[in-house]
Image 1: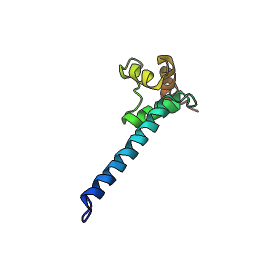
Image 2: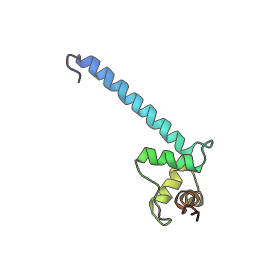
Image 3: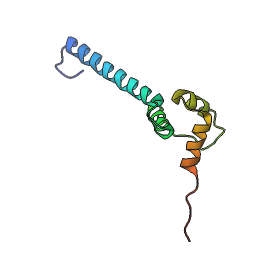
Amino acid sequence: MIPGELNADYRARLAMEQSHAAERRQTELLELTAAANGPGARIRAWERTHGLSLPRSAAHPVLKFLAVATHLSLEQVHEEQARRYQPLPTTG
């Protein structure tokens, strides 16, 4: 509570904050599966939503859940892993 805030005002403010948080969460969840977003964007949305990074291991068990949550195939997730984690070419 904010000092001097009435209980009714506090409850109303809290309800509004919860409503905004639910709207943000819904928007984040829609980004996970939006057909307009490519695999990279969907995976980044998943990372933001869950506070995790795409694992480097192609056999990591979370990849199956990531694929389901983003409506991507496991192959598409593996392709994004390869794109992100492939070694950079060296010049010399």
